[in-house]
Length: 113
Length: 112
Image (cartoon, rainbow over all chains, first blue to last red; front, top):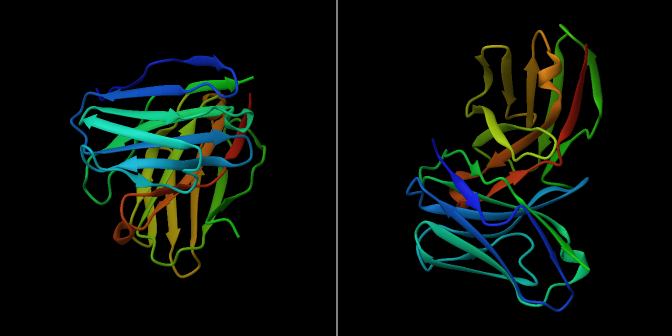
């Protein structure tokens, strides 16, 4: 069974803090993604990576950065957390084949106070 | 205009009825189409994928694709209370890289 593991289920941080969200997958997937999910807006792509040390901006990259030093691990970094970054963050991974489906982690509900 | 549009619902159907969920998309170059189911408090899971015009059936689920109308639908036959969830339509343009674009989802409620 494919497993995509996110390090925290719930996280509470203060504005201005640097926040790290970690994601690890065990299926040797080339592609990894970070989405955020907000009511009424659905899933919006923040960043994705199709190889180690490669990263591409998604639709809403402002205020975020990512790191992919190893194939199985993709980190999302909030350099200086703000209240409008309170959201559910979902990590996903997939094989490189063009029609690949996404496998999602269980999500991290981040609250920035 | 949103890239992938869905009626947010809730769509309420009685147990045993057919639930019909609809989705439109704006990118004519889209080539891969997916339906994900998301239970409350859980992450999305893929239930159907479709790549060519027409119908694709898998058990109680049928996905329908009409590229000319830029329209995708999901039919759930013999709806069960366990089908109550949010259904996310997702679209991918394979020549545009690795991005999958999601709609906001339709909440389905199946009444016992």
